[in-house]
Image 1: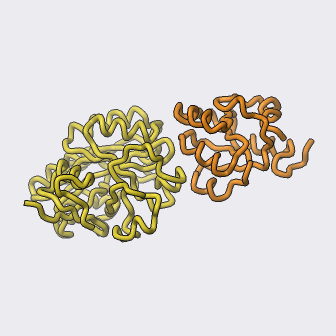
Image 2 (image 1 turned 90 degrees about the vertical axis):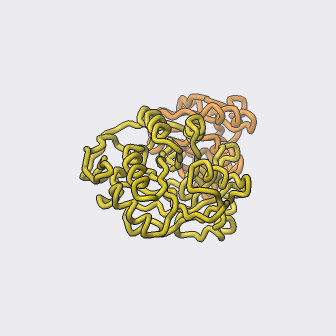
Image 3 (image 1 turned 90 degrees about the horizontal axis):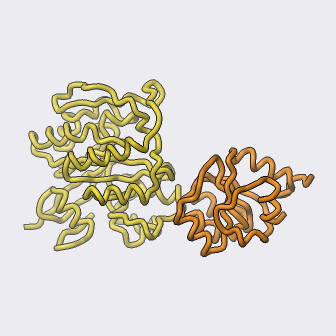
Length: 245
Length: 116
């Protein structure tokens, strides 16, 4: 039976240099449940190292959590890669790390905390996660798809690292699975506000860096269960699955 | 000044559109945010950027540009080269910074600078 699920598919953890310390695996799941969400995705900048902890905590508490990443292309466009399994995101991470140079300076960019589902600090990620990879958008989409993931162009309404601002328009041959608008634009008005979106599937998410921002924007998906496969169908509008609002 | 003269004068490497260097550069523009360039680059200009994405060709066509120069050791994506050939847009390369090349172009008289 199909029903409606609330999904916030772009949430940072304390691993992102700009993510708050309180964005711990336990904190995120707790706040996601309080916000009435049925499905979340963990998308840190250029890394998936905290995804497993949030997935395990989500499983324990009854909140479906997908592993993902917010990857920065060499055009300085941010794009989400959403996956079903931890193995997939870690394979994608290996590709991303190979194209990412530099060392983080925590006092300048922020701390990058790797944590477990007990909220224990396992260490700091030393890479410059805030920077851009050497890969083109097309490379990133191709690799995301090769590992079975979904590519969603982030916050396309935003001047900072949104595809329309960086590249003037959405390249028509880029095989995106969807685009995301920020919480600033109601999803129902996204196409009218940004005609460049065209016919691409469009979602909205919180892009939360602080606990209180989780669920400030979410999309309602009509599907059978809060899973990756169902999300994939909803984005494509197949088998009765769809993005409601 | 014609693009061809600029190529010779500043030893710009030709990455695409080498058969289409006869156009006059009508002013210049520097920018890496393509939305800004689409809105503000002078028609017929020579454009200095670090973006090698295929979308730069569409932007160049839109603003009827004389040429695009990738600065700072950047190379165009392979697809950018083929699109530029199709659209007859010269894509040039300059190893130094946009700042330095813009200064030289201006001094050479591009964009109303004092021709020397």
